[in-house]
Length: 304
Ligand SMILES: NC(=O)c1ccc[n+]([C@@H]2O[C@H](COP(=O)([O-])OP(=O)(O)OC[C@H]3O[C@@H](n4cnc5c(N)ncnc54)[C@H](OP(=O)(O)O)[C@@H]3O)[C@@H](O)[C@H]2O)c1
Image (cartoon, rainbow, N blue to C red):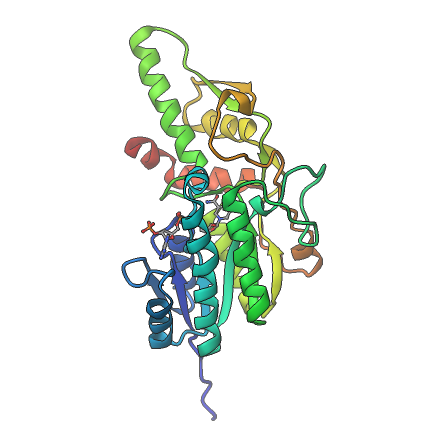
């Protein structure tokens, strides 16, 4: 009887210590040989270094998550944003080309200006309004102009149990408010903006969807997000209703929380393309959030 040979492709993940990088390493390890690399293994802004690491491993797929992701710091350090997010991505892209690896580049909802009255499609016009968004869009252009075998996955408002994200920030502030309220006898009140609308998505769900896109051998741009869209206020209210129900969440505008970088007011991503191509693995955000809080909520509250 002829032997069936199972091919275990090698997958290399950049930014393996980041929130999405960790989720990808965990998900892909179930079916692939995975190499997660961090800045210590290779700085993506060093062309020789990243090229040598990718050449040594010769992966079939490179999942490129490494990026300068602090949106406000990017305004202060625009040269660094361009170097890491654009030049760094070009370096990864060229290294992929040299070993014939398929590149998956993770981009952002912040490539849009947020003025549309509905969720963004892949075909919508990009027009970033901050340094981070421009640098990530430049990264997209670098991938699209040089190496054909690329998937660009645009995501937004990621949360996970690790790293820095809106969900963890809200939990940390709310926990402090509760502690202060206990000491003062006042009610714990937290004001959250209603004029930023997006599509919060669990890093694990993005990893599962990425696996599906790779296995279906697609190329080009895909939006990957949970649905439906929601304001930061509504999302925070849902998180705290489960975790700290004594906190009163009140609506406010972005003018009450001034930040260095402008944020698009409505950067929701539509997954219509995924659905039309019968590729979608995405869940409603409430379902993912419930599961996430059941698994990690208590531990997060203890840690922050
Ligand atoms: N977070 C979001 O809501 C969001 C939304 C849309 C798109 N994205 C995109 O999704 C991807 C993953 O985001 P994330 O939230 O997982 O980011 P993250 O947690 O900030 O992780 C990014 C990782 O990149 C590494 N890195 C930064 N500069 C590097 C360099 N020069 N060389 C090598 N590694 C470097 C960082 O290492 P150090 O810790 O050593 O700096 C970090 O581990 C990014 O491309 C981001 O632009 C994120």
